[in-house]
Length: 252
Image (cartoon, rainbow, N blue to C red):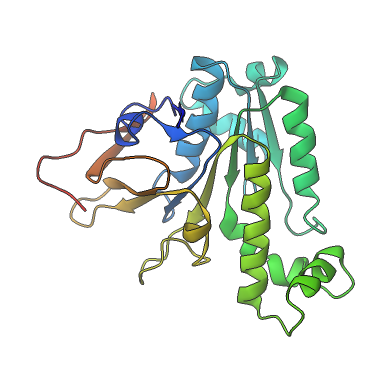
């Protein structure tokens, strides 16, 4: 299967050349481990190194906040936007109805002929899901009720919505990254406990418990290809994010 290089130094080696084209990859980690930066790097390098337009969707940051973050690494996102190589889209999850952001995504993808998409993050979508979107009478509720004609728990509703989001991302034909918070305890690989099963691949970012500030990167799953089984350190500098070669003898 054709691979799409991320452009991130060291990560493509860990992925044996990149992400399988058209796949949806989950990047899961606790706060401050570099999830957003990894996703933004994937979009930025796609546009600047590989001439692939991309869309960065955020539930937590406005486009202006993302542009400011990018400037820390010398990245001019506004110039890419002017060239139709990039679209930044903020989902206000408290006001979106019936997952209208999926239609907006389709429109943006068509505008720039997008090849890459990042959704940051699934955690915000699922945490606000029940109070803001799942209400009797909404199109989304009626759709889910037709699929599951029994009383629905929040977990069932969340899983169905996550399935809908990931299926929609795959339908675009783009290579995608979605992010999630990683629980500090337990065996799950995401806060919602099911996106790791729905995604084609999973990358985990975990603080190294014996060294303050160090973060481990582990490719846990890659459905359509080989990948490194080693634990890699990542570093963040003024140049961006870098994945270090694995330490010899250190494996999952």
